[in-house]
Length: 331
Ligand code: NDP
View 1 (tube, helix red, strand yellow):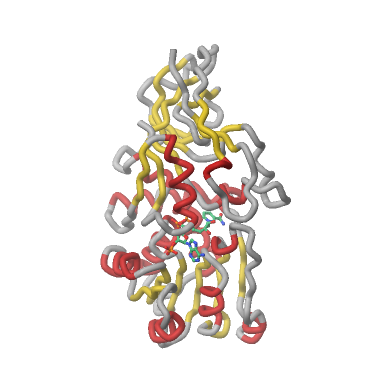
View 2 (tube, rainbow, N blue to C red):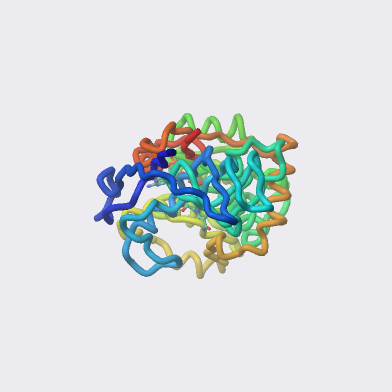
């Protein structure tokens, strides 16, 4: 008998999400049926979009149903198979959610081919966050050598990849992140040209100093006061890839102080949802995994241990307590 510990979403947050929105359950795993595969999940990904799925309101995806296992990407290993295409030992990515095991008919499993890339990276730089970085930068911003590109949440899963790809395109790259330690990492380990701490009292002046030629492309992950400060430094014909607005995910309205600057600077702003752009994934994943193997893209992870700690790690990530990609190690 195997117990499958899992985290259920049991209530919807009002404002900030809290631990009592979640419940740890421990059902027994059923016997495998013909054509089924049993996967033991090594890692669970915790991502900001999950906060949106906890709400009961119209969005690009339906609300996550109450009293079911929370949504989430996982990587793991087949440990039992009654399916001809899958063998014990196969490494797979899936959307099994916040639980230790998953049972599948094989249709929603993605084989992890490249053993040179650590499994956990398939949830970060070689996974959905990496592809979002690749798409927003290459397809919306379109960086040209010599341009200045800025990115917020710069030490995070998406932001860290954006900056490194923009450096490879020959740009001056300026990160925006919370705190001196994250900023030092972005410059020293990831190779950005500069990084500005948005929590510091002199944020606006420091940003202006870091972009002496203005900003040609901005990759937006947070919104709010950070976006306002960036807007006052935009160059004519600059491009904004609108990837996320995490400063408003707890339901606060996010004001925008200077919308007229979009017009005056003839800015092109485009939002995107990377899970709706599946045609770009193969090319993006190939380039990202090659760059990771060649040590041209680096990343950092914050690893919580055990499924029971997923809710606290998730709430911490929404407040910036993570440093790099937030994952949970399950086995
Ligand atoms: P991160 O690894 O960057 O973690 C989230 C970070 O957001 C925190 O570490 C924190 O960094 C920052 N943050 C939290 N609250 C605030 C705030 N109030 N103001 C400014 N920064 C804040 O997460 P991801 O890289 O996974 O995601 C980054 C963004 O990209 C999110 O908005 C997410 O929703 C979005 N996204 C969108 C996708 C799409 O398809 N459109 C796909 C993937 C991600 P710090 O300490 O620096 O403040």
